[in-house]
Image (cartoon, rainbow, N blue to C red; front, side, top):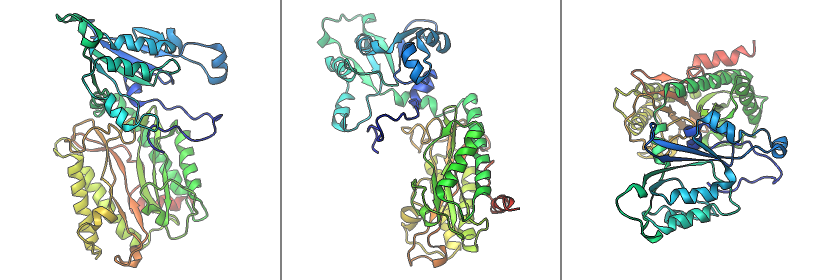
Length: 442
């Protein structure tokens, strides 16, 4: 499914609601059909906050559940003004027309909002076209998106006189890049939640390893992990897990999760629970029958060594970026393959055997703050993943005993003076994994 497309399914089926993460980060409001407007002013805190929310409605709430409503929105979320969401399409146009700078994000390009139109909407500066665009986006039948708007530099406070709408130049700028700069470094409160999410998911991995045997199906492994996360407090999966037995692990984003497991294979599971809007993202690989073969162990130790050495670099003092750590992981992987006698062509490793990046930022989104470059030097408080992998195709260019094996080991790490691993609860040493798997059979 492409970004912006309508979710397929039965029209009468309700899907679990998941709030837009930028919006949730700013105000913590977790209901649909809502919007937040921040207007720069001369008050002590420097801005006015207006929330547009669905009003109380006894009939609708009988079917869909309680709403916060206008009064409680002011009381609980500290907004200066709470407005009926049905008035959003009128108020937003008036608000935007008063300011020289408007920060907001247009809808995601989709079949209803083609890329070329989205690009035109983002062009700046504009005059009447901004107001016309807003009127078009939020027409008489439109509900407000879960989004945020920020306005600055009230034009009426300037010495120049506004003579007509055509003279009123409004610069539109993306809001998400500014919010991502705030989100990329986590607060102590955020780190506490992410530590809990990592611990929950790590314990779920332990129980799932114990549950695994050759009689299981991939979707049963998925179900076991989901159950263990939810029973420990996770509200949902942070993303659709990868539960890949045997050579299914050669597909990076394998999410069918519907095949039987086989004795002698490995299973790769990339999964994590979400806790209070924050994601965990962990990958472990273990033997279906509880015991690594020598060939499996050889490859596993190459990936594990790269994982552990790269984690050591996740500090502010190292002065390294994710891209630089990726280069280190690539070098370590090539050295490990060489020790095993696996001869790879110059670009085989990065194109076939280890084709993905070593990591990404992690937070409210699994791939968090996507506009922040991975070439940025790591700072204390950034949470990242470290996830080297090896995927040996069924190709005569590689030793037969290694063919069809896919391994990834992914941890969640906070960059501090010493790296702090949020996913430490999930076993990854060979001896610990085998002990964990064996404990279910005693």
